[in-house]
Amino acid sequence: MTATIISENQLPGLPSASGVEIIGSVAYVIGDDSPYLYQLDAATLAPTGRIVLFDAADDFASGRIAKPIKPDLECMVALAWPDGRAGLLLLGSGSRPNRARGWFVPAEGPQLPETVDLTALYAALVAHLPAGVLLNLEAAATTATELLLFQRTVGRADAALLFVLPLAETLAFLTNPTGASPPAVHQLVFELPQIEGCPAGFSGATFVDGLLFVSASVENTADAVLDGAVLGSFVGVVDVAAHTATFARLAWADGRPYFGKVEGLAVRQQLADGQFELLLVTDDDAGGSTAATAHLRLG
Image 1 (cartoon, rainbow, N blue to C red):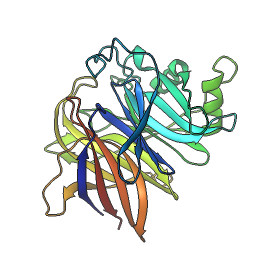
Image 2 (cartoon, rainbow, N blue to C red; image 1 turned 45 degrees about the vertical axis):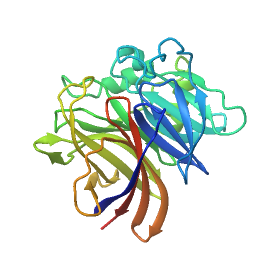
Image 3 (cartoon, helix red, strand yellow; image 1 turned 90 degrees about the vertical axis):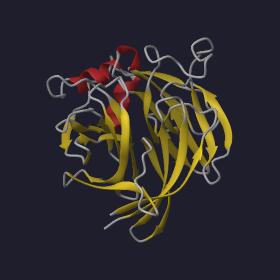
């Protein structure tokens, strides 16, 4: 497997990109310290609009919401809500109490965000974490029947976790947590690659045409909240049924390692059998964001 960066562009005015999803001709991007859901042209990456998720006029005055109070939106996935509406589910990381909320944004009609309380669902996930590990969700994806939530545990090689939940039951629980039972949680542990002795952590995911694509980045830190030096990023494919994961480190066409911190990925198109064009978004931990195009060759 090889993963080659083809191009990279700055995303001005879009801080701390943390996830990307493509629906039709629109690429939706979230930032972990922003109150907006950003809309880009999926082909050109030109900005086309933004959706206000919540009122943060004062908190966002500097262009970024401060770390202690930000919602830390890290997960975004396209799905159908229980009432049949297609849209996007945005989830906070859960690494602090104020990060246990999310939003559902319809993809059509008035795109009015609806707040989702994640407290009860996250409590069910915490019960499955290894001792000493804090919840820190970084990516989400769905199959036809499952919701997949990826835990990023920095500094530990034994806690790259994937939570597998029944999709319909989980969404029903989110819309009516007092009237539905908590969903069953199945947990898988993966061994991710390392750079300079620092293990990668899951950072993005998307399920397309039967393949679960993931990204993982490497930071030199052992703190779930504090950032560290970025050492590089990987993309790959996870086979949930076989409990296997295959990765390739991202590099430029001339072989130079790519040092961007990939926070999310989407599949732009299939180029040929086993070859895909990916759209990646990165966060430089200083408020800057980029969008990169990469070619992933499987096998």
